[in-house]
Length: 235
Image 1 (cartoon, rainbow, N blue to C red):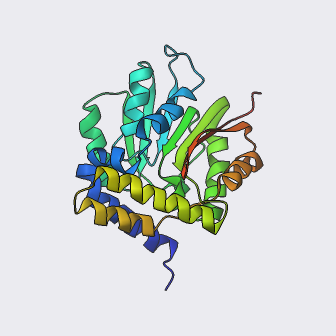
Image 2 (cartoon, helix red, strand yellow):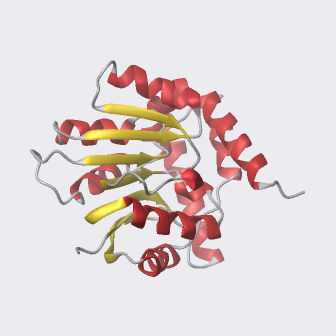
Image 3 (tube, helix red, strand yellow):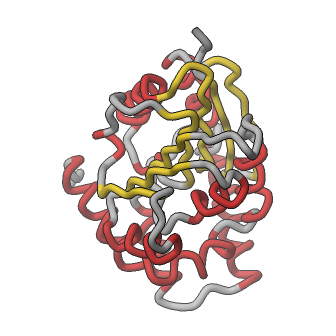
Protein backbone atom coordinates (compact mmCIF):
# COMPACT_ATOMS: atom_id res chain seq x y z
CA UNK A 1 0.00 0.00 0.00
CA UNK A 2 1.38 3.41 -1.01
CA UNK A 3 2.13 5.77 1.87
CA UNK A 4 0.46 9.18 2.05
CA UNK A 5 2.77 12.19 1.96
CA UNK A 6 2.30 12.69 5.69
CA UNK A 7 3.14 9.07 6.41
CA UNK A 8 6.17 9.24 4.12
CA UNK A 9 7.49 12.39 5.82
CA UNK A 10 6.90 10.82 9.23
CA UNK A 11 8.77 7.64 8.28
CA UNK A 12 11.69 9.58 6.77
CA UNK A 13 12.04 11.82 9.82
CA UNK A 14 11.95 8.77 12.07
CA UNK A 15 14.72 7.06 10.10
CA UNK A 16 16.92 10.15 10.30
CA UNK A 17 16.19 10.49 14.01
CA UNK A 18 17.64 6.99 14.43
CA UNK A 19 20.89 7.74 12.60
CA UNK A 20 21.49 11.30 13.84
CA UNK A 21 24.24 10.41 16.31
CA UNK A 22 26.34 8.59 13.70
CA UNK A 23 25.38 10.53 10.57
CA UNK A 24 28.66 12.42 10.19
CA UNK A 25 30.72 9.30 10.87
CA UNK A 26 28.96 7.30 8.14
CA UNK A 27 28.61 10.03 5.49
CA UNK A 28 32.06 9.59 3.86
CA UNK A 29 31.34 5.87 3.43
CA UNK A 30 27.81 6.30 2.05
CA UNK A 31 29.02 9.09 -0.26
CA UNK A 32 32.17 7.54 -1.75
CA UNK A 33 33.01 10.78 -3.58
CA UNK A 34 32.52 12.80 -0.38
CA UNK A 35 35.33 15.35 -0.82
CA UNK A 36 34.67 16.05 -4.50
CA UNK A 37 30.90 16.09 -3.99
CA UNK A 38 30.84 18.65 -1.19
CA UNK A 39 33.81 20.49 -2.70
CA UNK A 40 31.87 21.03 -5.93
CA UNK A 41 28.95 22.50 -3.98
CA UNK A 42 31.24 24.92 -2.18
CA UNK A 43 33.11 25.93 -5.33
CA UNK A 44 29.80 26.82 -7.01
CA UNK A 45 29.09 29.59 -4.46
CA UNK A 46 29.58 32.83 -6.42
CA UNK A 47 30.24 35.24 -3.55
CA UNK A 48 33.51 36.60 -2.17
CA UNK A 49 34.45 35.16 1.26
CA UNK A 50 34.06 38.51 3.03
CA UNK A 51 30.50 39.14 1.79
CA UNK A 52 27.85 38.94 4.59
CA UNK A 53 25.51 36.56 2.77
CA UNK A 54 22.21 35.24 4.08
CA UNK A 55 22.01 31.45 3.63
CA UNK A 56 19.20 28.88 3.85
CA UNK A 57 20.13 25.19 4.21
CA UNK A 58 17.17 22.95 3.33
CA UNK A 59 17.33 19.51 4.91
CA UNK A 60 20.42 20.62 6.78
CA UNK A 61 20.59 17.56 9.01
CA UNK A 62 23.58 17.79 11.34
CA UNK A 63 24.74 21.00 9.68
CA UNK A 64 27.53 19.30 7.75
CA UNK A 65 27.31 21.46 4.62
CA UNK A 66 26.38 24.59 6.58
CA UNK A 67 29.53 24.22 8.68
CA UNK A 68 31.63 24.14 5.52
CA UNK A 69 29.90 27.29 4.27
CA UNK A 70 30.31 29.00 7.65
CA UNK A 71 34.05 28.30 7.58
CA UNK A 72 34.44 29.76 4.10
CA UNK A 73 32.15 32.75 4.72
CA UNK A 74 32.81 34.04 8.26
CA UNK A 75 30.25 36.85 7.88
CA UNK A 76 27.44 34.59 6.66
CA UNK A 77 24.27 34.03 8.67
CA UNK A 78 22.68 30.63 8.11
CA UNK A 79 19.20 29.27 8.73
CA UNK A 80 18.96 25.47 8.96
CA UNK A 81 15.72 23.58 8.38
CA UNK A 82 15.11 19.84 8.64
CA UNK A 83 12.17 17.55 9.37
CA UNK A 84 14.24 15.64 11.96
CA UNK A 85 14.62 17.34 15.34
CA UNK A 86 17.32 14.85 16.34
CA UNK A 87 19.42 15.85 13.33
CA UNK A 88 19.07 19.55 14.13
CA UNK A 89 20.01 18.82 17.75
CA UNK A 90 23.32 17.51 16.39
CA UNK A 91 23.68 20.71 14.37
CA UNK A 92 23.14 22.78 17.51
CA UNK A 93 25.97 20.89 19.19
CA UNK A 94 28.19 21.48 16.17
CA UNK A 95 27.69 25.25 16.08
CA UNK A 96 27.25 25.96 19.77
CA UNK A 97 25.72 29.22 20.96
CA UNK A 98 26.12 31.64 18.05
CA UNK A 99 23.68 34.19 16.64
CA UNK A 100 24.99 33.39 13.15
CA UNK A 101 22.99 30.16 12.98
CA UNK A 102 19.25 29.57 13.50
CA UNK A 103 17.12 26.45 13.23
CA UNK A 104 13.61 25.28 12.39
CA UNK A 105 12.04 21.82 12.33
CA UNK A 106 10.26 22.15 9.01
CA UNK A 107 9.35 20.20 5.89
CA UNK A 108 10.63 21.54 2.58
CA UNK A 109 7.11 22.06 1.28
CA UNK A 110 6.49 24.68 4.00
CA UNK A 111 9.22 26.98 2.68
CA UNK A 112 8.07 30.59 2.63
CA UNK A 113 9.31 33.39 0.38
CA UNK A 114 8.83 36.03 3.10
CA UNK A 115 12.55 36.06 3.99
CA UNK A 116 14.96 36.61 1.08
CA UNK A 117 18.23 34.66 0.86
CA UNK A 118 21.40 35.22 -1.14
CA UNK A 119 22.12 31.50 -1.18
CA UNK A 120 19.95 28.42 -0.79
CA UNK A 121 21.79 25.12 -0.38
CA UNK A 122 20.71 21.53 0.10
CA UNK A 123 22.51 18.21 0.32
CA UNK A 124 21.06 14.73 -0.09
CA UNK A 125 17.57 15.75 0.95
CA UNK A 126 15.32 16.97 -1.85
CA UNK A 127 15.29 13.51 -3.48
CA UNK A 128 12.92 12.41 -0.71
CA UNK A 129 10.12 14.50 -2.24
CA UNK A 130 7.89 13.17 -5.00
CA UNK A 131 8.43 14.76 -8.39
CA UNK A 132 5.54 17.31 -8.29
CA UNK A 133 6.74 18.46 -4.85
CA UNK A 134 10.30 18.81 -6.17
CA UNK A 135 9.06 21.06 -8.94
CA UNK A 136 6.92 23.10 -6.53
CA UNK A 137 9.88 23.43 -4.16
CA UNK A 138 12.15 24.74 -6.93
CA UNK A 139 9.56 27.43 -7.63
CA UNK A 140 9.43 28.33 -3.92
CA UNK A 141 13.23 28.45 -3.72
CA UNK A 142 13.31 30.79 -6.70
CA UNK A 143 10.88 33.16 -4.99
CA UNK A 144 12.82 32.92 -1.69
CA UNK A 145 16.05 34.08 -3.33
CA UNK A 146 17.07 37.71 -3.66
CA UNK A 147 17.72 38.84 -7.25
CA UNK A 148 21.04 37.35 -8.32
CA UNK A 149 20.84 34.74 -5.56
CA UNK A 150 22.04 31.18 -6.12
CA UNK A 151 20.54 27.76 -5.44
CA UNK A 152 22.98 24.83 -5.14
CA UNK A 153 21.76 21.27 -4.73
CA UNK A 154 24.11 18.38 -3.97
CA UNK A 155 21.89 15.36 -4.35
CA UNK A 156 21.12 12.12 -6.14
CA UNK A 157 19.97 11.42 -9.68
CA UNK A 158 18.16 8.46 -11.20
CA UNK A 159 19.96 6.70 -14.03
CA UNK A 160 18.62 7.67 -17.48
CA UNK A 161 17.71 4.03 -18.15
CA UNK A 162 16.98 0.94 -16.06
CA UNK A 163 20.32 -0.54 -17.12
CA UNK A 164 22.28 2.56 -16.09
CA UNK A 165 20.39 2.84 -12.80
CA UNK A 166 21.21 -0.78 -11.98
CA UNK A 167 24.89 -0.22 -12.81
CA UNK A 168 25.00 2.89 -10.61
CA UNK A 169 23.42 1.03 -7.72
CA UNK A 170 25.85 -1.86 -8.03
CA UNK A 171 28.77 0.57 -8.14
CA UNK A 172 27.52 2.27 -4.98
CA UNK A 173 27.25 -1.06 -3.17
CA UNK A 174 30.74 -2.03 -4.33
CA UNK A 175 32.18 1.30 -3.12
CA UNK A 176 30.66 0.81 0.32
CA UNK A 177 31.79 -2.82 0.53
CA UNK A 178 35.36 -1.77 -0.29
CA UNK A 179 35.45 0.45 2.80
CA UNK A 180 32.99 -1.34 5.08
CA UNK A 181 30.03 -0.02 7.05
CA UNK A 182 29.14 -1.34 10.51
CA UNK A 183 25.74 -2.52 11.60
CA UNK A 184 23.23 -1.05 12.27
CA UNK A 185 24.41 1.74 9.95
CA UNK A 186 24.10 -0.56 6.93
CA UNK A 187 20.54 -1.60 7.75
CA UNK A 188 19.54 2.01 8.44
CA UNK A 189 21.02 3.15 5.13
CA UNK A 190 19.12 0.46 3.22
CA UNK A 191 15.89 1.52 4.93
CA UNK A 192 16.46 5.12 3.85
CA UNK A 193 17.26 4.09 0.27
CA UNK A 194 13.91 2.31 0.15
CA UNK A 195 12.18 5.69 0.49
CA UNK A 196 14.28 7.54 -2.12
CA UNK A 197 12.36 9.10 -5.02
CA UNK A 198 15.19 9.98 -7.38
CA UNK A 199 14.68 11.88 -10.62
CA UNK A 200 17.01 12.00 -13.61
CA UNK A 201 19.52 14.82 -13.78
CA UNK A 202 17.98 16.08 -17.04
CA UNK A 203 14.56 16.33 -15.40
CA UNK A 204 15.93 18.18 -12.39
CA UNK A 205 17.77 20.71 -14.55
CA UNK A 206 14.65 21.21 -16.67
CA UNK A 207 12.54 21.79 -13.55
CA UNK A 208 14.96 24.52 -12.44
CA UNK A 209 14.67 26.25 -15.80
CA UNK A 210 10.87 25.93 -15.70
CA UNK A 211 10.92 27.59 -12.25
CA UNK A 212 12.68 30.61 -13.75
CA UNK A 213 16.32 29.92 -12.91
CA UNK A 214 19.04 31.00 -15.31
CA UNK A 215 22.63 29.77 -15.67
CA UNK A 216 21.38 26.28 -14.79
CA UNK A 217 24.30 23.86 -14.85
CA UNK A 218 25.55 20.53 -13.54
CA UNK A 219 28.71 21.25 -11.54
CA UNK A 220 29.66 17.66 -10.74
CA UNK A 221 28.53 14.09 -11.32
CA UNK A 222 29.81 10.70 -10.23
CA UNK A 223 27.23 8.07 -11.06
CA UNK A 224 24.13 8.96 -8.99
CA UNK A 225 25.79 11.77 -7.02
CA UNK A 226 25.27 15.17 -8.68
CA UNK A 227 25.75 18.84 -7.86
CA UNK A 228 23.83 21.42 -9.86
CA UNK A 229 22.92 25.07 -9.53
CA UNK A 230 20.77 27.90 -10.83
CA UNK A 231 20.64 31.63 -10.28
CA UNK A 232 17.66 33.92 -9.82
CA UNK A 233 17.63 36.61 -12.47
CA UNK A 234 18.92 40.06 -11.60
CA UNK A 235 16.36 42.85 -11.60
